[in-house]
Amino acid sequence: MRADLEIIQEWIPANSRVLDLGCGDGELLSWLQKNKNVTGYGLEIDPDNIAACIDKGVNVIEQNLDLGLGNFASNSFDVVVMTQALQAVHYPDKILQEMLRVGRTCIITFPNFGHWRCRWYLAHKGRMPVSDFLPYTWYNTPNIHFCTFADFEALCRDMQMTVLDRLAVDRLHRHNFGSRNWPNLFGEIGIYRVTGANAR
Amino acid sequence: MSSVFPADSVGLVSPKVAHFDEPLSLACGRTLNNYELIYETYGELNATASNAVLICHALSGTHHAAGYHHADDRKPGWWDTCIGPGKPIDTNKFFVVSLNNLGGCHGSTGPSSRNPATGRTYGADFPVVTVEDWVHSQARLADRLGIQQWAAVVGGSLGGMQALQWTISYPERVRHCVSIAAAPRLSAQNIAFNEVARQAILTDPEFHAGHFVEEGQIPKRGLMLARMVGHITYLSDDAMGQKFGRELKTDHLNYDFHSVEFQVESYLRYQGEEFSTRFDANTYLLMTKALDYFDPAAAHGGDLARTFSEAQASFYLISFTTDWRFSPARSREIADALMDAKKNVSYLEIDAPQGHDAFLIPIPRYLQAFGGYMNRISV
Image (cartoon, rainbow over all chains, first blue to last red; front, side):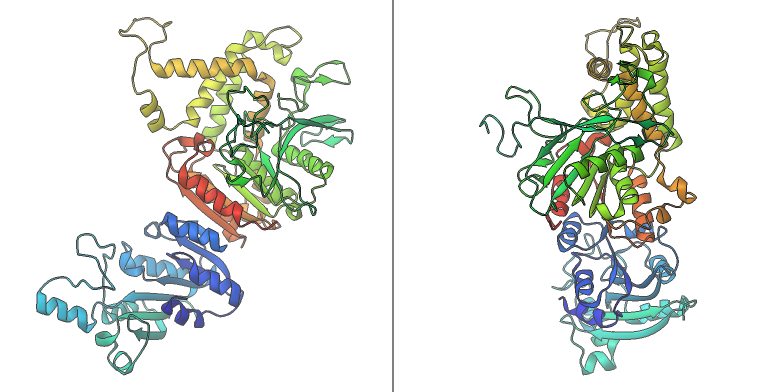
């Protein structure tokens, strides 16, 4: 399993009901169904990914996250997951609000734009960072809302979210001395487990 | 099997007729004491009868869904794009049953059949049948064929509604429900179009209050108009625009009301006329009523999620972006209710310009996604 999903699955209790936003090829839900008796749905818009979900026997709903989650009742899922999609949606704050409404807890992963390599690229070259991990240029990138860990945590405070767990890892999803102590400088990917102000 | 048919065709097929003598109570309160259902089958039923798939037809469909009746048939069955060896509903794997619904005009008992009680053609005396009635009659056909549980019940449009109804009426007898371009109930606009179609037939002087067969006449004009208005709702604005635009049949305008000038007029007239010679007007009325009455949630206070609470099937819903008869929003209503009811459901929205008719058209993503789902059904 993809390394970040390996970390996330540990945060998802057995027998829970999960909504996976931008579920990709359904790898996480498929694993959770088989190994943790989890039920739920993935939302996805890419036809190839949707076909891959169907092949895996994962429930997949063709739905654009930018249109919100208005079709889901409040607190209708135990966990709402969104991996590597926060930076690609049009209204990250609104989708977060919707996630907190629909799920009792939420798990979010996103790339850290405050990582030293990004800072170095921008400072040194004076151009928007491009890397193997984020290979797009500014005009064709699907990633339209980059943030740093510090930015995200500021949003968490503004939205009165409670951060239950956080992990900063490198692109291979390892955490080390640097990313533990200076996550906003040495962490490449943030994995957060949060809950809303209204949830317990 | 003859080599004149394509390799992925079920080839030459012939219909069978099942006769039923157990009375069937209908939603309207009346009872059919005996009736016949005409059906075709494709593929082989396996030893445990676990590979059976039921095809439910739409408004003007028939039991002839795939293959050819004669070597020189110009066209195969109406859903030949999806049924056959290696096709989405793979007849190497599944035993496919396709019937003509009760009230139909292609061999099952309907308004054009003889009423055994009177010895005369039923005509307007044939009872109004509903989607639920159809499902009950289909269940008896399943019993007759030794099929306890369908691997899947599959249909598009009105056929998709029957597939949904199966999971409500017989939850333990359906493992998978594939409902394509359907809706959980008709909108006022849908009913309005049906009413125009009915009025066209009912007001045709040759309709004779439904007893036109005895009068030796056919309400061709009414049926033609009904089909023309129906056909408009099957196509998208884009599809019509691309197919006909404002193209003229003649090189000048005639400034009269009789000439067929625009290509689209010619097309609609042709469709209407062709239909009026092969379809029974009373059946058309029945089919539109069955559509209008379909509303399984009505018995549950309008709560669609509760309506599906007993369903055991996994659901697969497909809609088409330019379908305005049963738009993607209508399929999403079903998907949302099923998620609310904690059922297994997947939903796809296929980008297609063809409108409602798209479910009959070999659109690559549609066929691939359809086949992908059918392939993982274990039998």
